[in-house]
Amino acid sequence: MSRELPSPTGRRTFLRGAAGALAVPAAAGLVGGLAAPARADDTGLPDYAPVPAASAGPAPNADGYYVGRISGHLHWVTDTYYQAMFLSTRHGVVLVDAPPTIGHNLLRAIDDVTRANGRPSKVTHLVYSHSHADHIGAAGLFGPGVERISHVATARLLARAADRNRPLPTVTFQDTYRLEVGGETLQLAYHGPNHSPDNIFVYAPEHATLMLVDVLYPGWVPFKNLAVSQDIPDWIKAQSIAMDYPWTTFVGGHLGRLGVRADGTRQIQYMNDLEAGTRAAIDSVDPSPYFAKYSAQGNSWAVFKTFLDAVADTAAAPVAAKYAGVLAAADVFTKDNAWALLESLRIDAGLLGPFGVRP
Image 1: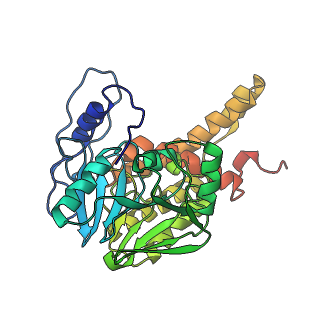
Image 2: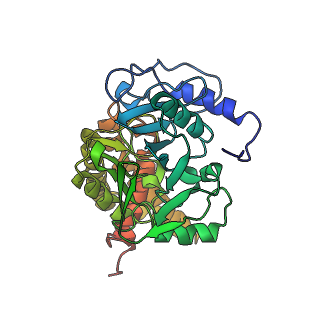
Image 3: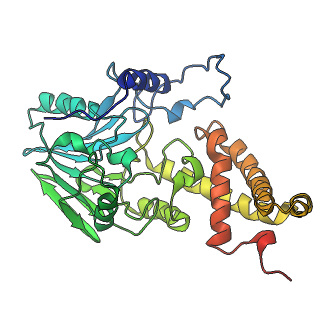
C-alpha cells in the first residue's frame, strides 16, 4: 500500500515528541484546552510568549497525529505543524495534500477512519493544493494508481522540480474543476496567484468547509515574511476571496487546529493594522542617520538594510503588542511580516520613501 520515503534516523520519534510539546488536550469545539505553562530551559534559545489557549489544537496520539471528523465523511489530520484533509467515499479515499511531516501517519489516520466506517481505505484521488514540497512531499506514498489532480501551473512546477516524492498530476485544470467520487464532492478553483503561482481553493460544499493553504492561519500570525508568499498583493486579496466562500470550517494547511470565520476576520484586521503601521513608519522614520553613516562608507546595502529594518521595527512593535495573547507567535513573526509588507509597498505600490524620485 505504501513505500518508505527517505528519512533520517529517529525522525518519527522526534516529530512525535515535538508535536506533543506543541499540542494540548482537546476541549469542546474546534480548539484545544489550556496551554501548559512555559518551562525554563538551559538551551540558550530565545524565549517567546506562551501560545494562547485558543490557538492550540487537540493533542496528537502516541504516533504523533490527530485525526478528527469535520462533518459526515470529511476528516482532517494534523501533527500540529501541518494539516491534510480527506473524504472517505464508497469508492475510496479522496485526499487533499500529503505533508511529509505527517507522512505515513496519513495512512494510519485513513485506516483509523475507514476501519470504523467500513469504507475502502485505498486512496484513489489525491488533490495537490500547490506544488510546494512541504505540503505534498509525501505524495509518493500512495503509488502509481492514484488520480492526482492539480492546477496546470502546479504540473509545470513539478515537472521542473523532477522530485520522485511529488509525482506529476494526471489531471489538471485551468479555472475550476468539480471532483465527484462515491457520492462526495469537492469544488476546486483557481483565483489567481497568491502564496504561490498555483495555489488553489478546495471547497467541500456539503460540509461547508474550505481548504486554502498558506493564506489564513487560524489562531496564529502568518508565517515568516507573510508566508514567504510570491505575490503579496494577491496573497492579501486571497484572504478576502476566502471569506466570500460560505464556509463554517477552515483548513489552513498548518498548525494544530481548524478555523472558524472569526479567525479569518481577525487575520484581515491584523493585516490592516500592519499595513497602516507600515505606511506610517515609512514616513516617520528618519533615514538621515543611515545615509550619513553608510553612504560615507560606500555601503549602499547597509543603508537599505538599516533603514528598512528600522521601519519594520517601528511598524511591528504596536501590532505585536496589540495581538499578544490573541494571536500565537505575534512576537515571533510580526517584524518579519512587517518587513515583507514594507518591501511589497515599496516595489508593488510605489511607496518608495527615501528611495523615491530624486528632487
